[in-house]
Length: 118
Image (cartoon, rainbow, N blue to C red; front, side, top):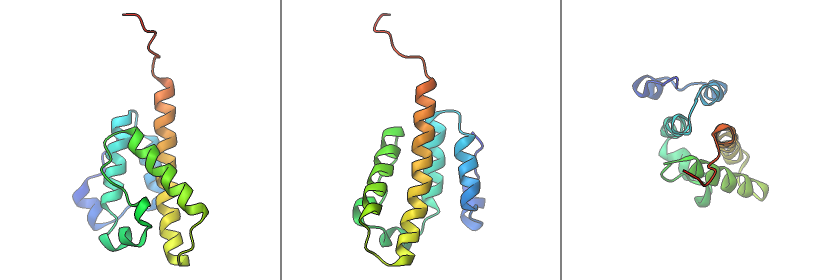
């Protein structure tokens, strides 16, 4: 994975499109999880508080947490009635997390399937 130095990232946030490249360059589910954690760490408490409560990210430990968050963000977005600025924040988070979830799915699809025999 192309690690993003957190100390540097916190002072100079990466453009949103660069985070897509970080996700795409992540070869494993664990690397995607690390990238998502770094991305979420850049969000201020004030920004996170503007998201609907059900869309605020919790602890991200695996790909299932990422896809669950992507689902909650997408579902909430369908009926979101907040301000245009809050909608932009929701869309920014939703877009990134959905992309990360999609990449995790592609990674998992490439893994050898268990055959049930050992």
